[in-house]
Image (cartoon, rainbow, N blue to C red; front, side, top):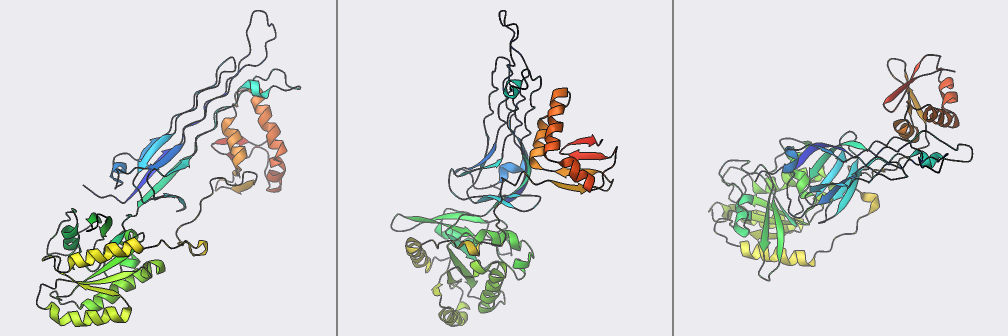
Length: 429
């Protein structure tokens, strides 16, 4: 199965249904009042973690998701039906970002965890809602509010207990295939593994843990060389790192040098990642040349305060002992308490409830005025400008927000164009 760990999609929540403008038409009620009902709410876009998914492959074939519109209001004060939420299923470990500014909207790690990413539009109010002592027979009703629309970047970080790191061809794929049912491609050339592979290790005492074969790292990975960032991202959530080195040195590499180079890349990418507990694993001890390097690697582990294991993924020598130790270590593992002052720099809180009363006015290249205000933009989208009463209501709100005064301060002249949302108006005194 192909592994996809990053994709871009567009979502559009459902628009609200339009409110209805109508009046009672009954035989013995000659002056029936307004009776238009409200429109229903549009569908929210909701992301939910599905235990049966482990890739973002489905989003390769479908990239646009649109929620249903709410039903329109009807006569006799009948409300329109609200649309059901549009559920989008994703694997555990999915981070959802706004593709335009990189803000993190949700970090979904637990099975059945959900997040509303785009809110459906509110249904427009029917004319019955606008009846008052001074307005006995309003003829206008609101249009439905447009649903939120977003371009999203989905990123998947593997949720594995143990991550294998090391240079290409040190035997990570061979190790994971020897301890689990995972069957990564194994060959003698570098970068055989181009995508992360997950395996489940069953321990002697009927407990299991998930191990991830992260593709081989190279110098410069933390700076994005090769597929560095794509690979390093998957190690971030692991509890324990098995640092695999080639003890045989048959490719002319020094395993001690390799150890420090890989750790340098981890440290450059993330301080928290470099502080993760490591176990140094010397692989390929079945090859005679490993005898020269094993003493140096044992000393390295002692100097760095690391647990050390010498194994052969091919003959399985030392593998059972390694996995048994890892299983015991994970049983005793306690998740550190997150410090709010030490959040990852690329993870930010995204506030869906932005201030709605701030009015911002800018000029575009053509000299037009663009008015930014969430409440006003919402009112513009929900006003039926074909109805004279609706237009008068909008003009009243415009005056209440003192938009005229602000525009005059900015130098607006008769006949100039003002943009609000997707509407444009010609300014007049």
